[in-house]
Image (cartoon, rainbow, N blue to C red):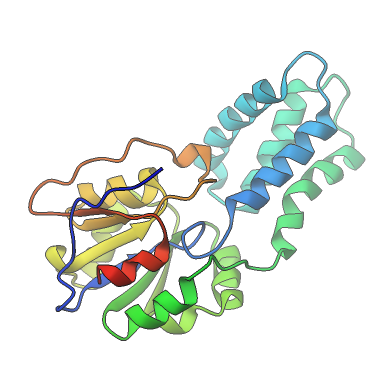
Amino acid sequence: MVMTMTGEANSNSSQTLLVDADDTLWENNIYFERAIANFISFLNHHEYSPHQVREVLNQVERQSILTHGYGLHSFAHSLVETFERLAVEPLTPALHETISGFAHTIASHPVEVLPGVPETLQYLFQRHHLILMTKGAVAEQTSKVERSGLKEYFSAVEIVSEKDVSTYGVIISKYDLMADATWMVGNSPKSDINPALAAGINAVFVPHSDTWVLEHEEVGSPKPPRQLLKINKFSELRAHF
């Protein structure tokens, strides 16, 4: 799908870019999708289709987030609960270990930085103020930031439990950011684009083909004078900033 540009930054002035991490700077959701596929295959339900099993898992994950937040612990909990809801056989300690293992294999996967990201960050950080803003479990996200080799490009790293309007307000206040010169860059309409626009800053939508289904929303429209850029890939930021 060809994305369109609905606004453009003033490349002659320094901007603050709040940059998402998972599925913006490096791959993330594809590993969860593989784990889910393995879980559904293992479950091998005789009445529910794989799509129906996935719908149940989505429902369970929505509830798990409220209790356990984001990250591998919450994901493992969701897989186990989905098994308990759908399986005929009881959940034994051995089954629990196997199902949890689908989630925890993700932790050891190398950080796979997306194409063009290091070069683009190298270009941007010399011209603008970059802050990494990611949500999730602190230990997990910190580990990915360190292993990515990208930390040097950011003046600060913010790991938050949720990306909503109030959280953006806290970050804006903490760093005394000017709304007209601040942009949130990310792949998630639900967490990166819509709440940032609602908080009164600009946004850059960089879609990813495997964005988590629970992050899907229609991309909102900015209220003037705020702006929204829609680009195809991260490296295109160099043409606008």
